[in-house]
Image (cartoon, rainbow, N blue to C red; front, side):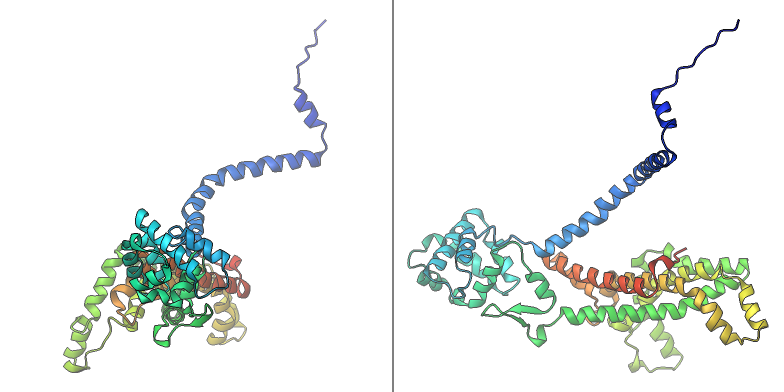
Amino acid sequence: MASITQTAVPASSLASEGMPLKIRLARAQARNRRRAFLLVLPLLLFVTLTFVLPIGQMLQRSLYHDGFSAAAPSLGQWFSENPEDIRPDEAGFAALAADLRYMKEQNLAGAAGTRINYNVPGSRSLFTSAARKADDLEAPYRDAILGLDQKWDDPRIWVAMREASSPWTSDFYLTALDIQRGADGTLERVDEHSRVYLALYGKTFLLSGVITVICLVLAFPIAHLLATLPMGKANLLMILVLLPFWTSLLVRTTSWIVLLQGQGVLNSLLVSAGIIGEDGRLALINNQTGTIIVMVHILLPFMVLPIYSVMRVIPPAYARAARSLGATSWTTFRRIYAPQTLPGIGAGVLLVFILAVGYYITPALVGGADGQLFSNQIQFHMTRSNWSQAAALAAMLLAGVLVLYWLYDRLIGIDKLKLG
């Protein structure tokens, strides 16, 4: 008689077999989600470390600056106890004297003066010179400090110190909006001749729009040729489109300087051809014209490639069918072909515009004073060590781009982007 052998089955398997199908499916989906999360976790960490955290630090830096608050604890306490006083009393000057001594001991006068100098130019030397003589200050402190320099009686200095007594401040955004605090602490527009940032902000978006439109006008026929030419000719044209990517941005920009300058190649050719006179050479460099020409050349491939990626998958049979039904060439293009290219056009416009808004090397080299963009001011403040002002300007630029991105999403839809 044959023996019957029983195989042991784990209890977990028996339990799972007895579970309803819905629960087993839910557990399988949860396991798949965990596996998918683990697969993208390295990319998520990379994006967080290289993108999210730097932007967060930039936004924090635009609102936080402890250069003065850390150096003037006594004044910070006096301002908190006297929030409405604009003109300081003897106690306020006594707190200032104590902080000047502290600044001298800790070598903080330069940092404190630099922070106030952002709001009231010329304040840094005021703090450094007063800190050097802080040990000689005696009561009455008001007379002693005013004896050092009458500028200490300027209400703008005290308004600026009140705002800087807290490390969290909106001063850098106010400066970016061409707004300042008056002698009574109220907000007011800066002098008309000193308004720089808002005009440059608008100019940057306007020039970026002009560059984007020119790129679109030039890129559309190029992309159409790429999509309709025979393979051999299309590949040759694609090489010419991609050729700028094989050359350094700095080399391309300096090459344009050689071509566009007053004694450059283009002007010399025009003079030789008799089109212009020797004294009528065109000003094509160190102005907005130079910025537009060079940036169009640099950004044109970023417009061609998204449009081409859409055009190459449009079936030619659509156009033939429209013509067979009596549509003219213009009607076929307007109602059949062009609407199908809109996702590529939208992607190219968005890509070129965002790149144009953030460019600073090209405008710095070929734009001169007239062709500078908003990003050049950011770079200027970064090199001058006013990182908080640079962060505020960068946050404004980021906000403008995000608004345009949101408008694009509402009007066309991000899901319709065709980047390749």
